[in-house]
Image (cartoon, rainbow, N blue to C red):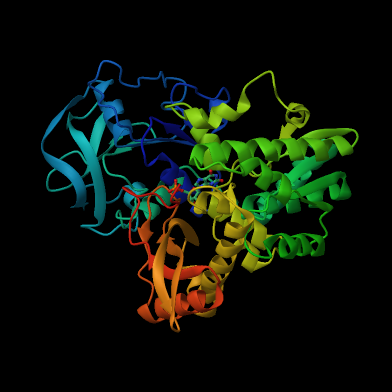
Length: 506
Ligand code: XMP
């Protein structure tokens, strides 16, 4: 078990991902909330930080309980922290130390640099520089601009590096992490999807016993994998509820419900389309739409949960990035909290919560799902927002607009699959614009809707680039949409990146 101590760097999650890619389990904890069982960790990694160690409010936790006792790798801020607070000297850099650099290793007999080639490319991102090493510091490597690019503390398994091994641009970064964790700390590489499934099923059995659990399925990857895990552990004591809010993709409710049943899940499909559409009537404001859908969902789910007796747990498909956000150095984001206003909580929200995926990243969830035999097509589905097509219909929502957009979306998504483009795209969909435009069909003038197509590449949805789809594909898709979908006479393609645009239009 590896501890990553987070000083608030944008790269902290990446460290965890790299470690997990080595099949090693790790946890991120904020520097100001140190876990109690410190001695149990086999290795500690200190992250980078947006702070300068010279700032008055610089993160400055007391690490005397682990320093020298548990092997430590200090990255960037971590390296400066070790220097600054332990007899070294950190000063503002004279030259810009941002981007690629090449490492010249001085102490190449060090295990930390085993199998790492001379001049290996590393990624730098810092504005302070370590002028003098801390007490007992021994320089291990330099770059052209950074004298103390890596050092260790003599007599301890404590290492420090100024560059970021977790960033892909550090070509040997993963090797360095492996050297530290496996060769130096002797951590076993046992964290595999298979091991995770076995361990989690056992834990769930213990935690839940013979009690009943309710879970809301969304058709997405996370809730599906969570359900299959729970089903393995407690069988039909897991009651799944899959709500049709009327804003799903064409035929999605029926086809996904069938899939769930074929997977042996104890699932009830609840078609509440009319209830959602009624509640949304006349609402154009995006936030208002989201709130309305969230509220109606809770009402529907609460009604359904009340039909079940003796339910003790509410299961959720929460994954690690959500958990990290809520415990991070910067605290949870404001919007996440607004749902959980104490007092008026629906009954099902008072249940005990069980979250079997709370320590997994998205790609790990997919691997675990594959391990359990879930259909690769379901696991490879694009993300789809909870409010569904409601936030892709600009302006107010009507059943007719939903129908038009479902048809357009269907042509687009099916086309991507037929052209083998679906898996090259991170997310795709269509947007119904609140404008009509003039067209001509046969000898007739038309005045109909405009739709926009959107396809993006991304890793986590935080940033995104529009995808350079082949012109042939766009041409064919546009033709099919206009010929097939009544009410649409114009198709445009969105060529904006995020930032400054967002993926969705609302
Ligand atoms: P934006 O539009 O913010 O979207 O660039 C980033 C990712 O988040 C999804 N998204 C949502 N998902 N509820 C959700 O469950 C929402 O209200 C919501 N809004 C955006 C979006 O589809 C994209 O993947």
